[in-house]
Image: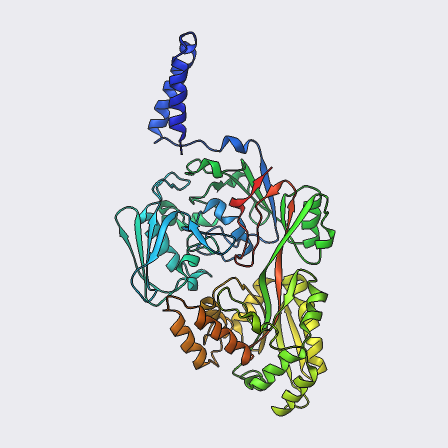
Length: 531
């Protein structure tokens, strides 16, 4: 890659070969070269091919903070790589390719020690180098920030630097998914500069990453819109496809589809309820299954004694007509499933493990000693649109048919739902969203491990599942263990999985590269171009 200093020097040689023009250009060029030397050769602010192109993205939610170590907003991962390039890039097919790191590997066996080799030309938007010391500073900060992505790595014993460009991570326990953890599908690898880390209060309102763009705080209103302009120090100018990118926060699905139809935004987060309103003349609809909705149960039976019996849990699974629910709630933008989703443990043969059979459901309840059914309360994520209260109401109707009466407590916002979940003292059933593109290693920690986020009471655990997890997390190929966990969880009916729901994006015809896939949680705006 030729940087701006080399380009200017080439032009300087061209101009001095024309004697009649020398007196006009030479002083200017020399002054420019002196300026470059004084500034350390700072590169141009944009790729000339970007012209005056602006990309506008419509999101349904903004970040809770711009500090990657403290934010866990899934949809904001679409734009975070613009400012905070990750150590490793995850491709649409689920494979990995270089990011700020060019090579990586596990050291030895057991999946506790991991090494990264960094590229040597990357710089943060404050001009400082992305070297081994900077990576160590960031990872040490992230580990202490106590953010929502903390568990994706596990406890770090130490981060060591080997020379200027090699970093070694040493964990207290095995993690077989470190490449994913450090990818642009979450925030561990989304580095900020050492100077920014030293003043963490500023990270909540500005960006100092090593991505192709940086936040323009003068044209940003938190919670409303975020404006990004090219990072003058980015190492690959050909990757800067726009001279400005704006992320607009539009929470209402109908307003988002209106914005894309009218040309106010170029890409918008879609919704099954508005997909028919997207104009086919100006908009393409792209989608892929990247969410799962299910009911997590009090399998220990502390708050609802019947749920401790696997026959009762199996009855709940047989009671619901998943294909009918899919048709009513998401239509073509989803599919039924009776198995908890994961990127590496899902067994398609188990997806229809509990076909709709209300007679069998009633028989199982009677066999377990509950011929008249039972009552319980369910905590509902009301902020999930059609996948919130409407989905739960459609599901509960089938439970009513077998005598199971559920009272819905709907949290109007995600924050309210989280607050109630953290208390978790009155809800034996939780309506929850799961990301099926994540490894079973993570799903276990969230849903199956004692005192996991969705098992905070810690009233139950399955020794068979625990042993499979212990085996898989140290294996070179953990896939077989993860599949056995998935089958075991389905057989024992630890959940009532309902459906996979597609993430949907409305894309203006001139925008290319927006690729949600079943392997990757979100598409990444750095991959998008305009024609």
